[in-house]
Amino acid sequence: MKISALFLLSMFSLTQVFCQITISSSDMPVSGDTIRTSNGVNPGGIYDFARTGNNLIWDFTGLENIGQQVDTFLTVTQTPIIFWPFFLTSANLARKVSGTGLIPGLPVESAFQYFNKTSSAYSDIGTGLVLSGLPIPLKYTDPDVLYRFPMTVGFQDTVDSYLEVSVPDLGYLMVDRNRINLVDGWGVLKSPYGEFEVLRLKSIVSEYDSIFVDSLGIGFPIQRNYIEYKWIGQGFGIPLLQVSIDTLLQTESIVFIDSVREINVGIGQTNIQLHSLKVYPNPADNYIDMDLSGITDRIISIRLLDMAGKSCLMIPLNEKLPENVPFRIDLTPYGLSRGMYTLMIQSKSKVFVSRLMISD
Image (tube, rainbow, N blue to C red; front, side, top):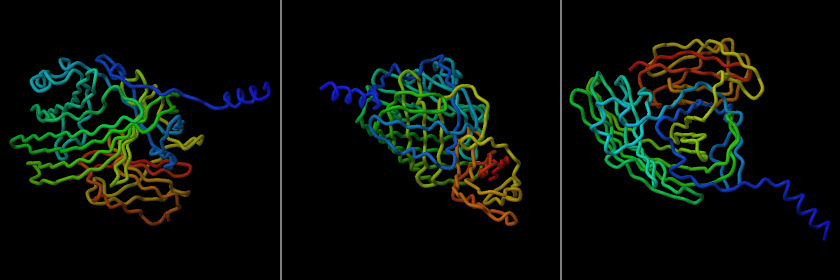
């Protein structure tokens, strides 16, 4: 009996057991919170973000940091007064966001995203934009409920949200979104920031956008289908890690809570330097050609990132390409907005980057 008890004790000590946590409204941000995040890259596509389960360890410590920002949460009255009539009675929290690419073809001067936090839900109410000094409230008729509380394993929810805005001499925007939320796992997340107990929330989003820009004289519909994976811990305000994957374009955006750190693009333990990359035409419209001279080893991936660090294009290769032949990328399938981007070629030992301007 003593041997059996000792054996069982030793087996128990070798098995990591974590507790399921519950997420509530108190785990969401409050005004005055400042949260630093990093934009990440999945090196060589080595991580499977879809993997989930119970009492699981997600080890993403090798995520690469390609940029940082700090989110500051505000009360509605701390945002510009021009937005108060639209959001003061329906939201109680806000944050300043980048306006880049929010409405293709229109330069956004500033933008604020508004939320409503209650004991039962945390909802995206909409976004306030400033265009040429004119306030444009993009407010959902039906809010996009991001979380309902209490949130625990097995929770599932379906949300329909809708907004429609028409501004004379500027344009028209309509968003019709369906979101299915499911807590499909729990365990421990390991990220560059640390190790935390988490719930894993999967959101399947189907969205139809209709946009018309008066200055361009064109309108176009966009059907978007994407999956959001969120690893949520207690008391952090926002997900410790969020990965958004466009299922059509196969692009991914990675954001994780982080500490202040120097940006270092690398693979594993290899020290990698940034090298310039020749790209033409620049500004570009429908395509780009890349000069691969100087890239003598295996190319792992080619990525295009917007100014917020979001991955807009990703081509996994893991092969050696001819140095004396330009590599062409057709940009037309990706629906890129006009603006500045960062083009990145990641090889086995180096990273080559270039600024790229996308014209009309």
